[in-house]
Length: 110
Image (cartoon, rainbow, N blue to C red; front, side, top):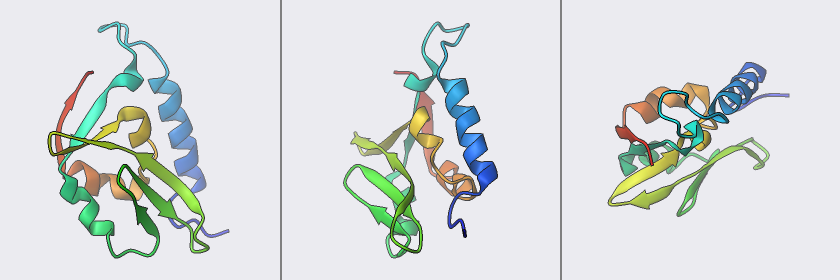
């Protein structure tokens, strides 16, 4: 099986990240998975003409060659920013994270 976006190691990393986020931060007392990251909406431009990516009004799906979803990320737009919860960011393919982080505006707790 050919992996377009995620290798088996990437799947392991996602599981580890989700396990980490499913806890209360001992310093702040807040759930780690409630954190969010704000991105410039232009982060999506890279994918607009990519046949292996589907972009909707509040999601981006990374597809296999057969058109099936390999992984996807939900987001919402708030005050001109594309907001991704930390739990969703785990599903950004590892090889795409550097691109996404280059468009980060700030991190905040909600």
